[in-house]
Image (cartoon, rainbow, N blue to C red; front, side):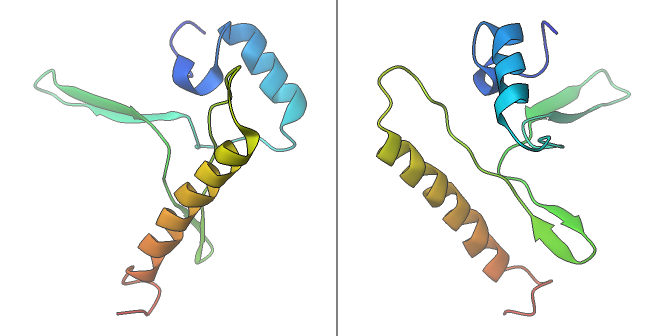
Length: 102
């Protein structure tokens, strides 16, 4: 609970923020905003928070976007930010060798 998910994802205070997320969001986030990484045999490691990531299932690409809300957030600007993040991911799909577009 102290480490995952990252505070930049859950908000603070973390436990209560996660309870509110559970109450408000209609579906589970899945891998989105989770963590992914590796530990190597030489002692190295690399970890990250999973955002701007595609999940491929049954030949379809899925992704999620979101934004952080704070006390002085502008709702319209926050909404536009989520659209901008989604647009970048959609454009990336256009260059994918798996879409048939080249």
